Amino acid sequence: MAQPSFTLDVAPPFRLDLTVWALRRRPANQIDRWDGAAWRRTVFAGEVPVELTVTQVASTQRPRLMVEMLGAPSEASEILIRQTLNRALGTDIDLAPFYAMAVRDSRLNELAGRFRGMRPPKFPTIFEALANGVACQQLSLEAGLALLNRLVASHGQAPSSTPGEGKAFPRPCDLASADLQSLRALGFSRAKGLALIETASAAERRQIDLEGLGNLDDAALGGKLDDLRGVGRWTAEYVLLRGFGRLNIFPGDDVGARNGLQRWLGLTRPLDYEGAAKILREWRPYGGLVYLHLLLKSLQEKGLIAATENRG
Image (tube, rainbow, N blue to C red; front, side, top):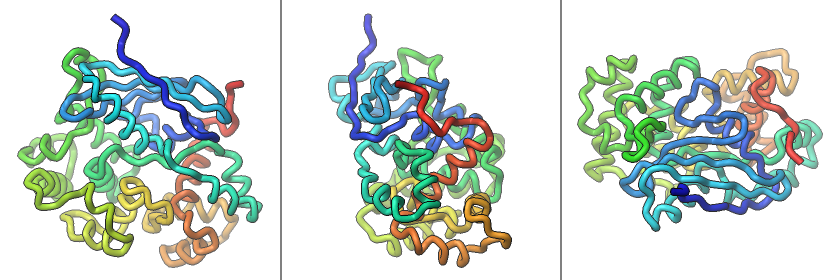
């Protein structure tokens, strides 16, 4: 029997490969899988885990996505999955104002043109964004992703009809009653393990509505995030950008990102948080887009992505 599928038209320009790499960040990411043509990820459609395979079947200027679903999707699943894809792939974001601003700055215009078609992705849920921030604190990105891969393997759910496929990222209900020692066994520190369990428990008991926080402005939202266990300025800003899609936010405590900004601008002295913020005022309100484009630049320099589209 043919597996359920649908197509998704996206306003140009759009490149799935660049958008997925901005989401997955490193080849070690086993949650967002990319084989050079298709993005695979297991997500929840309501209470049902569904394995998605997404391919781009037309060019940057005529983008269309083919979405195939494995598992046991209901008729209502397509609506929920479309919403998830809008978040994860930024398909409903209009970057025309950003490109218009970039034209007025030769440096930014070159960077934006090199990766034209990348849409700013968000994690499918705010809880996943928080978990990513907590896991990657004071670690290399590779080490943080290794923790997250183990967390998904241990506490995630695979589609019941295709148990060999990937697992969905754990929801708060999957971690609220987790044993701290089980997270320690995965490599999480005591502090990180407690942060995940406490936040999951608060969300599960409805003491905090993580998704509902998006109605707050940046300052109030940052304050609410900072009140959560294990969340400091870096994690809060990371979640503002990667979870809530606040494209004005450049996580200034990200040393790798600051170093990338310094190299891109040809500066001789390292940047600190305040120095980066001062420079980024020139490109307000798109500091987060600069952050994501510099991420792609670093991936290109590692030979992981191509800047030019290889399809007709």
